[in-house]
Amino acid sequence: MRCEHCGRETPEGHYCAYCGAHLAAANTRYHPQQRRHAFAANPSESVYHPSVVTTLFPHLAPERSHQLRWILGGAALIVFLIAFGRLVPVAIVLAALLVPLLYLYYFYEVAIFEDEPLAVLAGTFLAGLVLGAAFSAALYKPILDQSTASLLPGRGPTQTYIVLTGVVFPMASLLLMLVGPVVLLITRRKFDEVLDGLAFGAASGLGFATAQSIVFSWLLITGPLQRPGQAFSWALPVVRIALLQPLLYASAAGLVCASLWLARDPQTPRRSMGLLATPLVAVLLALILLVAPALASVLFGGDVLNLVYYAAALVLLLLLVRVVLHVGLVEKAQAIGHGGTMRCPHCFHEVGDTPFCPHCGLAMRSTSNRARPGTPPASAPSSSPQASGGAAQ
Image (spheres, rainbow, N blue to C red):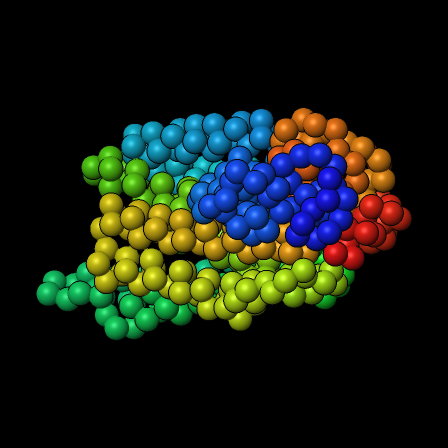
């Protein structure tokens, strides 16, 4: 059958295998080429579905995504219960390591950069970890002094504390989280896809969050095993440390890096990518959504309100990341270069070396490297006729 959107002959199915447009005539309320009802990295979800797992772990097959949701939820519950029991040092350390360890497992599971994993991890997670530790250590005493001054009778947060904690720290944090990925952007030019940028940014953000949590909680970590006070006063902040803050940092850095990698990707887009996919807009939005919860927590704080602020910012950032990923995967679609057939991990149909699965619309670039039969290295150009034809569209 011929796709009326790109003009190519495409295998029978619901989606064009080359441009990804939705071909089902009955589905008229969705733009067939934008296909926002079917996220390119997971067509069973809408682009506007703020899923942590399918956004930050887009290479995982559906069954692995479900497993990771259970692992993430179960581990977070265990950390919460430990904190609820006021075993504060144990809870903080586990909370700081929870999401980063899951992301390192993800790196291994899908073999994103299996030809040089040490260089990639050193340039992302370890760079974020070292920079986060140094920056947090440098600002620890000034922030602690201003926090102590703010607790004096009859005084609220000092102006210095508000600016330092609510504005300077989150803005500087984002810039430092981008250092490692930008070095890789310059030195590892073979990693030129939007998913590469997301992975680099998210890993750096998680490394930074880990270091920040441990440095700022050092006195609690080295203190008594069990702390006095109400259980929720310990448990709720740990939820923010364990889940919301690292995911927020990962999403912010991932959003900026995804836009940077889209700008560098040599593949010519089919149409305009839109403002959200431009690096300047991505940086501004990431800064706003990092500053907003931090500033609100300082001015109108409280254990429950802080969770609300960070959760709302995280949802918005996840949606922005999904839009940028979707636009990049659809507008810069290309075959993955295996030269034969493979089983689609989403719908389990046998598909050829085309940019999209014609049956479910999955962008085949978002599949795990381990699932691809004989995929050449990222630097090698594809010799597949279908790949060349698809890229030319």
